[in-house]
Image (cartoon, rainbow, N blue to C red; front, side, top):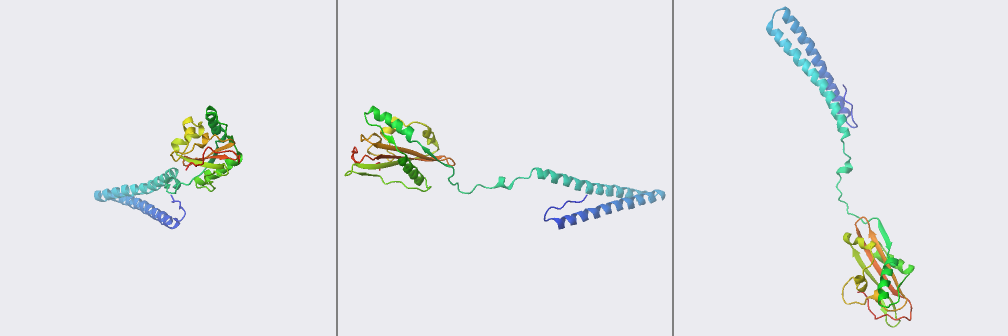
Length: 247
């Protein structure tokens, strides 16, 4: 009949156990006293005493049953409640700022440069080549534009030296991520400028020894990506179509 204390409730649990025990003793004592009074009243043929004693026995028995049954019921509900106890984590509010996570680099140089070369072949232009060093610079630039550290080159062409390099970048949202698994469309290859305007389309520059690198940095947690293209002419004496940049 004792109530089992939980951590930090030992004192109040002791008071409850003592109170229940005291009440049960009183109830049993009342049953004994009322039963004796009932017997004496019957022997004395005193109907009023018998009636009151009978009522006392009934009330005392009911009180004892309620005390015993009540404690048993509360013990049972306590066990049932433990089974439905929720984890405090389930009630937490996700109010922390969402930080970028699970960044993934995707080297698109081979596939997308191949798409560009197919269009260049239609126009009778020499093919672009890929370059591992240029791809590493594209990775660094994509990381920089995504706020993850790195460097982007300065767009420049040197008309006097006839050499130069240009980069361009695109921000992809959730609806654009499928493009990373697709080929470059001819319309895009002929007009790839991400900032608009009438700019030189370096993807179709007729110069020889053109190198191309395309790298995407995808944020899988926030469903977005940064795509960076680097186009470079390293031939020294080769001529650019004209001096200009994507910007």
